[in-house]
Image (tube, rainbow, N blue to C red; front, side, top):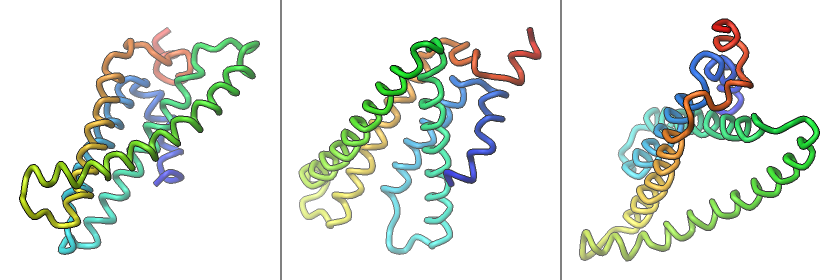
Length: 163
């Protein structure tokens, strides 16, 4: 999904802007995590593959948007320092993502006991997917709060045509 969406990413960002694309991609990421939590052993493999593709496309699009947007207001003379900070913070947040997933999985058992006295082992994972979906949807609210023209300096198609 990552390589497949990359050629389309520039077109989407240039056509719609960073804010709408981020709102859509983060919403889709959160919803796909909820949907992954609903999978069962009876789910057809085609549905699982489609959901995995949808999730991967949304995640790739969101990451590309955030990774590009963070450099939009950096002056050329500060780019080296910004790149170093970005690389360091990216590693930090990747580790935090693993930690958050572990915490969500750990919380899955006690939370699933709230809903049923004898939860199945899969319920722990369902709860973890739902918790992570909620965290990701929190980033949608951050995307909504972006200013409408955020990242327009990086866009090439529509913004320049309007000028």
